Length: 277
Image 1 (cartoon, rainbow, N blue to C red):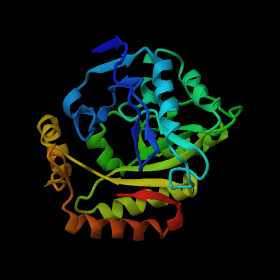
Image 2: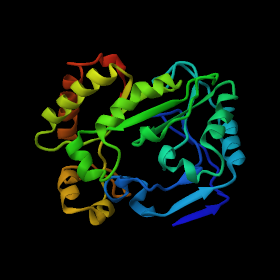
Image 3: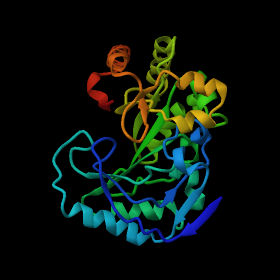
Image 4: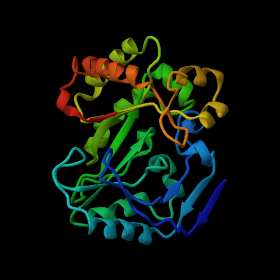
């Protein structure tokens, strides 16, 4: 279901992970294969998609937010205020449903002296926009995980190998490309699978900045997931907050993330990790 509307939710939110802030949604919802497994957006939204037509008001919300923000060099970016424009959707996949062309929306930020955009995608093959003439390189974060996990948690989505192959193609189009290890799945045998993934990325795409985000879970996600998906996600079961969000038990998560970093540094510089949690 797609509903076109004028959103009244025009609040830009502080962020300290992928970006300095999160813009109001141009699109809320997605048709990606992960909506029935780990996607946090779908916990309550399911497969509904809202297209918000008041794009200028959405952009102006970010502009107003930044007036009260003091940018310093940080892990998001050393110079620009980074704005996550696709927190609740994969805009690359959903770009044909946008109220204006994706490149026009990106250009609004490019024309601003201090704002820049970031977005994650699991469909980099659909991103063909040449942004080499932009004043600032927009950032795209290509999401990856071992293919055997993706087959279960992201059914019928772009393969991991072709996502990796798209990294250098996107750089040639003018994009700043980061690798998005999200979500990281801890399941018996994960160490060997991620070691193979790092080797493949190193061979095909070389070293790139990255972010690392361990899986969070929720009872609603488990209810709608397949048996195989539930089995992969079951270890993320420690209640994190009053909303019922679950994470890997901290006593194990810290150890597993340290192992993840050790494996990662056999292929890449530790300084290429922008953040990890």
